[in-house]
Image: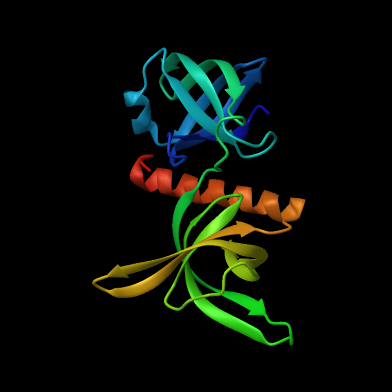
Amino acid sequence: MANDRFMMINSSSKMICEGIVKELYRGDGEFHVVNGLGVLKELEVGCYIRFVFMEGRKGIFEGEVVDIKGNRITLENICSLAKYVKEDVRIDTDFATKVFAKDTEGNIFAWHVTIADISAGGVRLLCNTQIPLNRVLEVAIPYHTSYIIVDTVLIRESLEVTEQGRYYDYGCKFYDLTNTAEKMMRSMVFQIAARKAGRTGGLA
């Protein structure tokens, strides 16, 4: 997994910096931060950090910081937190797109939505109108210069009221995602994270 990308996250599973995995062997590893170097000033030897990989093993991992030099972090005792942390890393976004649904008679319905955040496991949608829950929706997700059409299921709904008006907030889980689509989602999440870290200095 050397030269793979990694993303460091905080306890809320929000990205704080990202970079390249230089070495990883038997629970020890060396990581070079590319975007979000300001975060290194806040780290100390002996603290534990959480991170995810762009490729290879899925889930959230944790390791103990044993050395910090320049943009390099050396970790020991790296282990998976799969038994304790189920949430995937979520990246805040602001994509305007559409979702589609088909009823039992074959009629197609469409809603304008905003993708408020995205992870490899699902998306959070904001919409001015109510969308029926517990049904499969096709979501058009921007990917480079085109879109990926992904099936999702709405699993959570809340109504938000602000000075600008009212809108519905939906939590959606990807449904029957292919391996190819999942890799594309993970790749896009890392690309968005890298851009955000480059602009903001790595602060989530």
